[in-house]
Length: 511
Image (cartoon, rainbow, N blue to C red; front, side, top):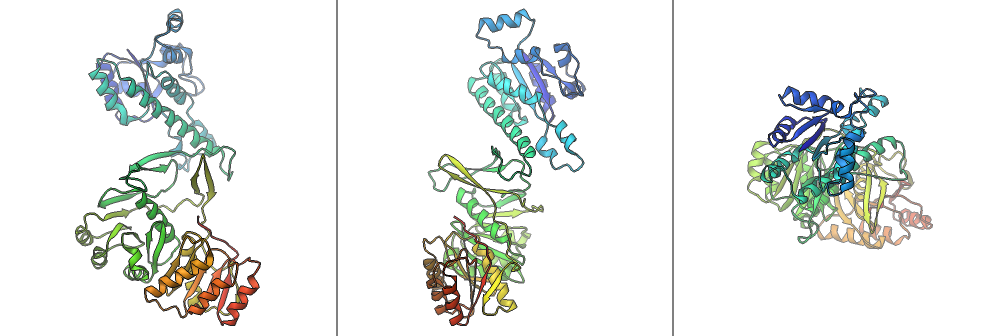
């Protein structure tokens, strides 16, 4: 039996190679891998002794040779393949262990220029892996240190043989690894292209989820390979049940809203829509505002806080039914209090890196994928026009706050707010006037006075009926994109009521 080993990542490599040698494998290794095995006291044959050629071109060519690839690709059940090996004095390989130069990790190394990165593009490694995976009926393809123990276990139990099921699974892992590797290189070459002709994202499974959108659906969370940050990067679950698909969907929605807000903030999300958002001088006050905005909808929601949770706030949270609680820190006493709610999923985030501004937004559709840049434009009022009325400084703050929230509400979307608190949210309606009506009704049901409040719309008002409903309820200022054929009618209604209206010239649909 014969094993070829060429590994950049040396974790556990000596122990794996020693296990193979104890099973009677002849070890063949290349370059630095050979040196690593020698230092571990292992006997092996160097690749250049097998090929009869030294490493060429500063190591660019080591294993690209018929004596290597024929030994991997030969079909053991074909007489002509066995005859070809015998004619040329080539011995077959039964196992290939390869992991690749870490090109994706190297992208974050500032000392590497383009030439340095190109030298980290592995050519021989992917070729070896693909060859071994293609011939999985006879060859074991190993590309992850996490599989070493499984492979050794089967080899020991089988007297040097492995099951077809294991070889097939390892082949799938190898092809997925080489595909992800090539996609990372392709994306690097495509940098600067917004939408290249062929778009090849790759993802790694990060977490098995309790279930999907419904309990009968299976689900897992995958993080995009090479992303600077992701939903669960540097996030630790401190307590609670396993996370579900819906938990993470809502968590993502809540975190996107929180990223818009520059003061201590609380965002409560239910079914991917914010139901209460508050900003204040402290995170405790922001939570009180967000909860009071719509305490009924907040029941069983996801709560995202932008500040640390201490004991007083933990007492408030423990008094509510919260599915997921997410914050940057929890003090010891707070965790003791929250432990009274063992089913509450408590997540602590220690990620310090800023999100990637160039991150794409993906939406799965039948047989395809819709891809767009994220709607990251933050409302600051600089491009907005006051088309009627006057807007005082505190009302500007409320208008921009409402606009930052409405971006993250399912269209058609309306947000009514005042004093850094959402009062009523109309989400996912098929007509804008219905979204206005729903937001007003929600606010009134909860006893929120609407006199002097502001209203944000994610798209223009096609008619004056929606604004008129809001004006009749006491809304004092509106912010919307403008651009309707009937803008003048809408503005006239606002003028007659003595209110103000701002056009942003930016639509923010979220379907």
